[in-house]
Image (cartoon, rainbow, N blue to C red; front, side, top):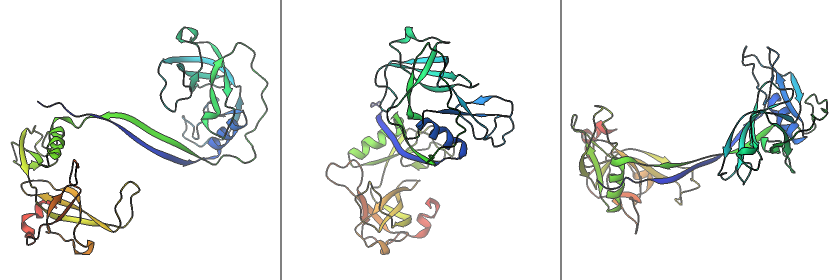
Length: 313
């Protein structure tokens, strides 16, 4: 069996959210080196603050200042920091219950090694030199054995409050397409399209999935399909994508390759966009070194009869 493919993938996008009064006060407070929690209906002070009471589900806004010092309740050592994490050298992820709070805040703890960290140790906030109203205004926690400092007496009212944040969401992972799609991708490298036939219903799935979603049985019989096919449905794209060097308008279509029991999608070229139609017969166009068809173009054959592809709409 050929080696199953795998590749590192990254999903990344900026996440923008507006802030309500509680989160706005909390983040603006961090900008001003003040830590604010919120008092719940049972009297507990929640840090970081919640917008709704965890017991009654009612909105809560009773802000309470807590100290920038606290106690480690639990921790885990991070021996290999990753890009974008608070520190570039090994550190501990710690849950810290700040003095005056009843819940713990998760953040980095700067320590020389895991032997220097323990549950119950006293720590304090190390503030970032430049603060903008974000959780990163807390650079990290650091060991501290002094007394808690005097509170500022803040009520949560600040000038120029933070009303929204933009956070970078990122997911790094290794993707493997599995046995069936590995064979499909390898075949595309040879300008062939290969599907798999269900041993029960006999439908040929392209791209193959390794199992029939209708019958629930494994598929392993490979079937070469196409290269020609029929446009079943299509749409005209009028908004230019940032990552595609294609002028709008253009057409994306579902294409039922000859011999396939499932339509796949592809771009239609070589014909004005307003002449693309259901039943149009097309064939793939490959670019030099391409691992998949760049687009599909008309073959010049008569349009396919509707009855030949209606089950594939």
